[in-house]
Amino acid sequence: MPRNGTVKGVLFARSPEECHLYMELHPCACGEAVFEWSRHRREQRGDRLVSVYEGLCGQCDRPRHFEFEVTGEIPPPPAYGGEEPSRIIDPSEFLAVAEDLAAAVPADPATLDPATAGDALEAIEMAVAAVDEVLKFLPPGATGVPPDAFLTEAGRAAYTRDPGRFGRERLLATRSDYQRVQSGYLQRNRGEHG
Image 1 (cartoon, rainbow, N blue to C red):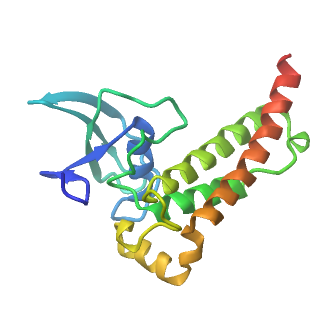
Image 2 (cartoon, helix red, strand yellow):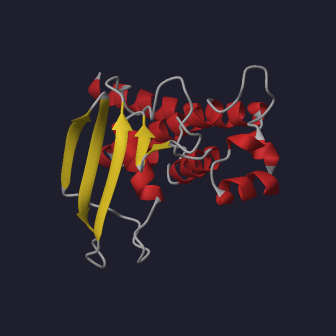
């Protein structure tokens, strides 16, 4: 499998969540980031299972089409994949997603109504899962994500600007901070349903 995660134009994805995130991170040529795919199917192509997403861009009506080779093993949400790092999403993209999700979640769940608190819990769970994905790029014993783990020009630039963001200790501290917030939401949820 090439390092860029493709086989003859088909991307390798480890879960539906990774497919969806990849599509979100790759906007239409018109700039529209939201892709409300209208058709999804799975196809067996020889020994490969391929998940196909199709639809029209909501802004310009341009046809959009994504194909992902997927495994039969699907990790439970909110995980983006199993033990191996992503082949199609850069560690800097995962970290940016984690930071954006966490920034939208109030630290105190008591400030939110139950429905909004449920959405916030889902967002912080996804933020923790995204940091977990960055950590998968760390080789055993490494103090940080190595430069060759970055798949995109933007990812390499993000690493060059601040390699410390991708250090093991800083990532673990970020994950711990997000888990504390997550724990507060889980406790609130148990209190409402207990």
